[in-house]
Length: 249
Image 1 (cartoon, rainbow, N blue to C red):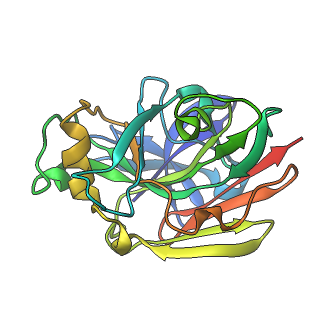
Image 2 (tube, rainbow, N blue to C red; image 1 turned 180 degrees about the horizontal axis):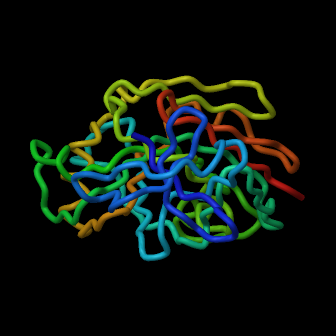
């Protein structure tokens, strides 16, 4: 099943996408029996909004693809104000000298969890979505933890287009492209910690609530292409779909 938050008649509406058709969502997407209602139209007719509510947290990871001598990846909270929907745009910050896109697989939480074991983590997952965790890596100013600071600009988190409930998170192909040219292809099987271990690690620190998102971090090779003003960035994950966003001058 694929859940989407769409603009329907000027209102943010949760829906189910099946094939090219958008259906009304009947029931609760977090309940045991969400179901599709009346057909609302073709998916191409709808603006696909990023699939989070204003109350949701965006937990992001760094160092998720290389174990080294650490027990787990780094954790930070990305602001809700950094999120945009597919098709959106962000400003190239005046202070930036180097910007990269980061194509990432994200976990969407299905029910409240705290201190959940990796063995039980699957029961707490609603599904998965795509993230472009755009980042200023080098800038004209000096700051502490520049890579974290550089992820918090308005629009620097493209999310969507849907939440897919039935992909295999241990075998998901992630692709990154700039201006239609693919430069990165990698499989989630190469994550240093799988999605269940990530939930165990994060939930030791952060209580996760339904709809919260954990973005699993940038894969190796994400920084092979520096992003320039005017570029279109695309993240594609098989079984979920693609998100596009533009960085403007």
